[in-house]
Length: 563
Image (cartoon, rainbow, N blue to C red; front, side, top):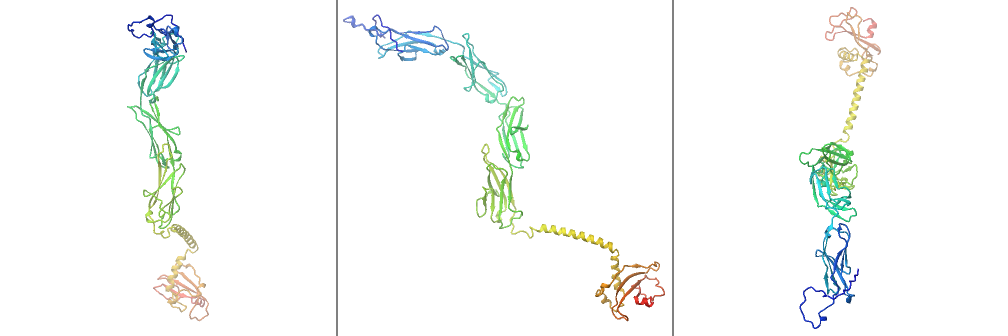
């Protein structure tokens, strides 16, 4: 703003900064000059300035009437420091007075060409406080244990009556409680994350005055470290293997702790170690453990980890367990589910190379093909399946093995059919034994005396005389062509038991050899009697002590009355 100074009504020395030298003048007019403007005066619009209130300073001066068009500039200073540079405005405004605005103020006026400068008088301004600077207090102390309650208080007293104050709390320069009526900030259960630098500020209701406390550092002492969940042997588990999960933490001192294990956010165990004896597919999931103090005021959780239970099998393209030189062999490694597996084949702990002469790999490494088995192909084959897309990108793997003990030159004789054949033969043998047993029982029931007859016949045939003129040698050659007419009868005991006579053999056959009569059937009776027995007066006794044969007679003799 342009301010036109008043014209000076009197003459005066202009811009005198030192005592002028004494000089002789031919005329008084030669020693006098015009005063361009008067000495400036600084003023403030308020007698008492409160914090947050706007106040204005004014610099007043008057221009000489003879130099009414002179342009002058104004500057303001506080305690010797410039608070506003030279400008055409003769006022300086403080929008919201603060305590630091207190001090000694002066202003300075100069011409546009900076040939003439004049300073004003000095005035002192004291800014009156609305409220005292706050102080932050901590209870119970700046160092507390986890789980304890911590209370911070922001203390400030208003000086001017009716002043309304708002409180703000900060942690590490970040607002944690903003412009509230409350003078305190409470941490119910202090945790490790509550350690840090704390500060509070107090401000007037309109926000024109704001004051900050000094910072305090609060340290929360750990009762125990954040737990870590560990898995053995691996997070990728072969079905049927044992899995051990351990919740590891570092307790401070003699702190008694409680442990919990979770699977898919459900509690499954309440100790620091959890064991799965034989892992199954349903054991796959997200696991986490937590540790807490006995009073439950402090609780810490581990990060979650994923455990995958996978089934892996190796199959071959043949039923026989014999591996023969020159034959082909295909091994197939498979798992139940996907997860982008990577397959690696090992032979005796050495990675199988893609060598067409020995091995061929197919189906993204799942299939191992051997075109012609050789002696060096014997050994242990391992299929190693790994998965790299777990949360922490660490490779985990499971292994299945297959054993080829030896390579045979050829199949063992009958190795493929010997057991079926032996089974059939055993069954047939059993049937034969059953049939023979049944047949024997049937024959025994039909011919109970068969065995005894055969024994008697054998003895008699050797000893009896041949009536048909054949020699003993001829008789032993077996029956003639007419033996089909022969009849056998059982032993017949005599009704006269006292004579002890029995008919031991009856032979009905055609008489061979010389005879006086025509060939016709005849009956030969053999009568046996033990030594000392009497045959009666009608028989012609021919005693043979060796065979005990008393008489042989035929049917014709019986007819003639010789019997």
